[in-house]
Every structure is written in structure tokens, then in C-alpha cells.
Image (cartoon, rainbow, N blue to C red; front, side):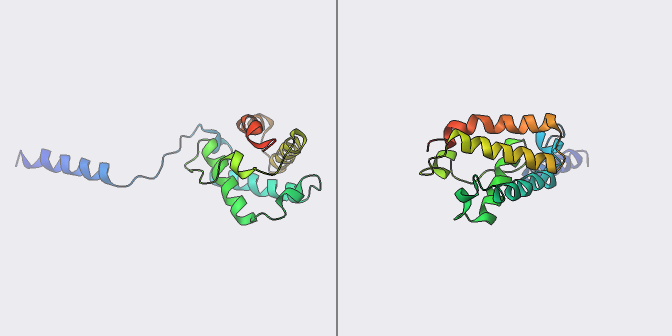
Length: 144
């Protein structure tokens, strides 16, 4: 009987280790501070509304599959902020190839993103953290 208990314990540990695990999300990530999946979705939905209503850049999205764009933006922001998502879209260079976007176009997108985050009550401090994720993408988007 003494040999049976340690063997059973080892078997139980092995079963736990082999069971598929849900990705863990740390409580202190930007993703969590944005409100998790619901917060990221709210930011993306508000951003798409802002962009759609912005005559300065909405023409860039005329032929875009909006449900797919929504899905990809959610994935991208979720992954970049420490959430459990994996971004499955193209690189920023590929996604913006041939669009010849300018720095002004990028800045307008950022304005719309800020307006959207303000609309859904993301604090200015968290907005700055989100914007810091997008800033390095400028060269990958502009001039492609």
C-alpha cells in the first residue's frame, strides 16, 4: 500500500501536466488593466466607428473586410498588451503595402484611436501605454 500512494500521486501529477491548459494572463498586464477581452473589444469597436466617420482616412478602409479587420485588431491589441491572443494577420508592411500612407495618415489614425479610448473611458495613462505599442509600427505602415 505504501508504494501505491506515491505512484498514484505521480500519476495524478502527470495527468495534470498533460492536460491542455488555458493560457494564463497575469493580473498586472496592460490587457487586464484595459478590462481584458471586453475592454479590448470596446476600444477596437470605438476605433472602427471613429475611423468610419473620419473623412480624412475612411477611404483607406472602403474595400476592407470590416469583420476580419475587427478580428485582427482585437488579436493584435490583445497580444501586444499581454493578453492570451496570438496575432494571425499579415505583417504591418504587407498589410499596408501599396497604400502609400503618410505620417499625417498615421497621425490621424492615432487621433481616432485616442478619441475612441477616451469614449470608452480608458485613462490617459493607459492610453499612453497603448500608444507606445503603436509608435514603433510607424515605419512599417508609412510609405509602404
